[in-house]
Image 1 (spheres, one colour):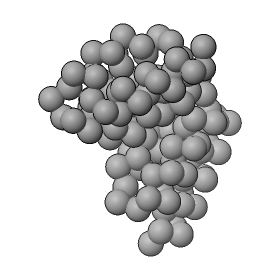
Image 2 (cartoon, one colour; image 1 turned 180 degrees about the vertical axis):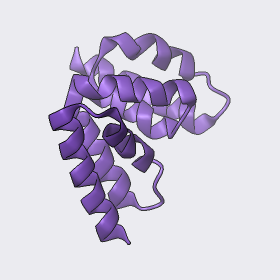
Image 3 (cartoon, one colour; image 1 turned 120 degrees about the horizontal axis):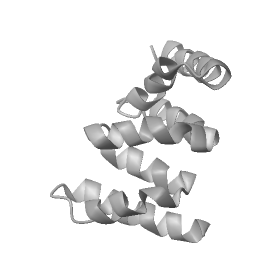
Image 4 (tube, one colour; image 1 turned 45 degrees about the vertical axis):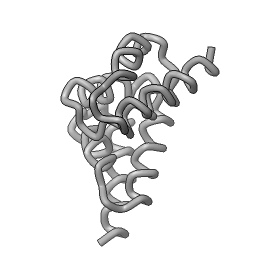
Length: 113
């Protein structure tokens, strides 16, 4: 049920942001792979709103290649220059969706600075 999943995202965001429990934050990252657009968008918004706090979760997902196009997009939106080398490397990824997401994230990242 979409409503229950969205409610879970709100609860996990609150737990993660107030306590720092990484497992709750990972629920948001995992939800980036949802088949439901609304769930993906809400999870992504919560991660971007968290800014620097979300960086470790997104870096872990990047290393695992988990939900990679969405993760790359969020890294660009957060605007941390430390991910620029990873984004540059992924612009030549064998998966065209990943390469395009990396290019887009780099464009967004450069507009932040």
